[in-house]
Length: 336
Ligand code: KG4
Ligand code: ZN
Image 1 (cartoon, rainbow, N blue to C red):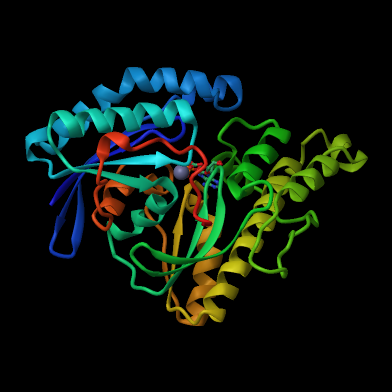
Image 2 (tube, rainbow, N blue to C red):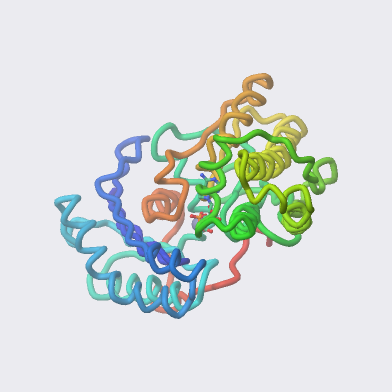
């Protein structure tokens, strides 16, 4: 079984060809084009601009992915597309392209929830077992779920305001770092220490998350005379970055481990851009080992948005009954 995956939910344009052989899912090609240089210039994503770039790159990216896999559309068994959540203009590019290709080439079309796709990046190397706790940490989402089977999960909680990635991005902006802020903060944090007492919002409070108060605390902290006077010298910026990272990581690790204990699972799976954070991986690994729970984190290039994860998820999802009726859904969620 060979699937072509298409991903255009945010600013990236991705296409990937994956093959399932017995129980193994392997990547034959995985291509991602991003408008990162434009984002860095404007300090974030401009939805209209992202969609315009994606219209230009979608066909070349699909062609490159097919060429790299040494296959043609003829050899593909199904086409999978992330149909939400995301930016409407961006989603339309991927969804309409996938519908057109499926129609013209007479292939089944498999709609994939982008958020579920993030988790399936874990199925590419060493597939996890059910039940497992899933922590999704991306730029727009922070969700905790209990996965019991393919397509079956119980939603435990999610963020009430900012997502973990959004908190990294907004704090990075406050520190004058470029977008996306997560990798910038984690790089800077290596030179600093967790010295500032930042809040750990809702750390012992249910399964929901809240990160906007942490961002406000950082904004207040950098305006204190002590930090202002330092002019970010003597490693102050590194310490700020390390403190921000520690606060976010603490909340994510504490809740995930608590959920694993409560639901007595033996596996934890991570997904989303923030799963690329090495400090999160390190702390979660220590705690999981104590609990004798196996931790699955995708390789860094499969944590951030990519089409391989969309194709991987599609091996476990039924094709659309009426492909031409598939609609992009910008507010598709995990919570039902
Ligand atoms: O999953 P993703 O690529 O896109 C969305 O679906 O949102 O996640 C992007 C987010 C951004 O907020 C970015 O700052 C964050 O992932 N991120 C990281 C790291 N790499 C990416 N956050 C912390 N540490 C990282 N190493
Ligand atoms: Zn994503």
